Length: 113
Length: 112
Image (cartoon, rainbow over all chains, first blue to last red; front, side, top):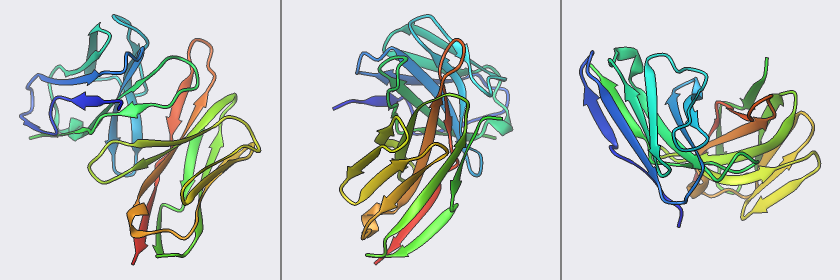
């Protein structure tokens, strides 16, 4: 059974803290994605990675960075958390760059106070 | 501007009352359209991929169809366990990589 796991289900951080969200997939997928999901705004792409050590900006990359040192792991970093980054963060993976479905993790509900 | 819209925003059905959800899109080069189901507090779960106009896919009480400008998710005789948010997403061809755009979702409630 395919699996995408995220390091935390719930996280509370203070403004200005550096935050790490980790995602691991066990399907040997090439592509990985980070989204945030907010009521009324739907899923918005933050960053994606086509392969190890590769990254591309999505629609809303400001205030975020990513790291992909190993194929199975994709990390999202909030350099200095702000209250407007309070959101549900979803990681996903996909087999490759063709027309393939994405597999999502359970999500991390991040609250920045 | 490329976009994906879904209607209605929310839908309440009685158990057994069939209906349809709509996903409309305006993209320049469609490569595929996906439907996902999302339960509260969880990540989206893949349901279907449709590749070209006229295509249909079925799974239990769900049937997805695709035209050149929209897709429908038909729910036949729904049960309470079908309650969830249904998301559609469109994969479009870009110059260097494909882009996937998600719609805002339709929240479905099926009342016993």
